[in-house]
Image 1 (cartoon, rainbow, N blue to C red):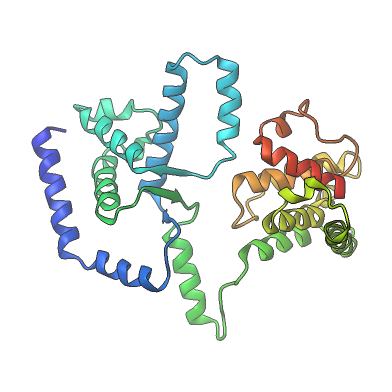
Image 2 (cartoon, helix red, strand yellow):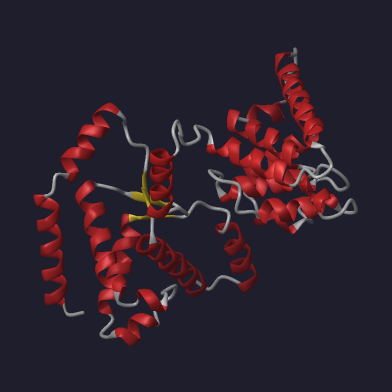
Length: 303
C-alpha cells in the first residue's frame, strides 16, 4: 500500500469519526459508569490479536531464546487473556502497509487467507478508533454480534425472557449437571459448603494460615467451582476419573465468562483432588504463574 493511499484512507476514517457522535456518546456513558477496559469482538479484531500474538513469538525467537523456553512461554501465553495495546496495533499496521502486494501480506505471521484483503482497512480503522477514543489496551471477546442477535431475538419472542445475571455460575452448573450421570452433584455441593466453612473457620482463628491470605473472593469462587466439577470425569470412567475431569474441564466450551487461566485452575483442582499433590514435575501445574501455583496448592489442601 502506497503512503499516499494510506494517508488518504486515514483522512477518510478520521473524517467519519469526527462527523459521528460516538465520542460524545461514550463520554456521556463514562460520566455515569466509568469504563475499566475496552472489549473488541468479531473477525477483524480477532485476526489482529492473532497476528500480534504471532509477531510476539517471532520477536521472542529473534531475541535468541532457547527453543525449550519458547515452548514453555508459549504454553503460558495460552493461559493469558487475549488482548493487545495501541503500540502493538501501530506496529502491525506499519508492517501491513509495508507490504507491496497481496502475496507479501499473505506471508505475515498469523494472517488468515480470508482476511488478506480486509485486514488492511480493518487494522487501519482499529488503529484510528483506539487513537480517537484514547484506548491504550483492548481485550478480545470470544463472542461476536451473532450472540447479541440471539439474545435480542430471544428477548423479543419469549415473554419474560432475561439474560442470565451470572453467566459464570450458570455455565458452571450447566457443565456440572451435563456430566452428573451418577448423581454426585449433591455431594459436591455439600463438599463446597464444607470448604467454605473451613476457610471461614481458619480465618477467624487466632493464627490464620498465611497461605489463605492470598485467596481472594474470586479465588474462593474458583475453589467452589473446582469442587463442583471434580467428579465430571466419572462420565468417562471411574478409573483415573481425575484425569478425565481435567480433560473435560480444560476442553469444554461450556464454561462462559472464565479466563483461560481460571479454567486451567479449575482443571488442576479436579486433577489434584485425589492421588498426586501439585508438583512442578506436573507440566500443566508448572506452566501456570507462580502466584497461581501457590493458590492451587492452598486450594488443593482444603479439598
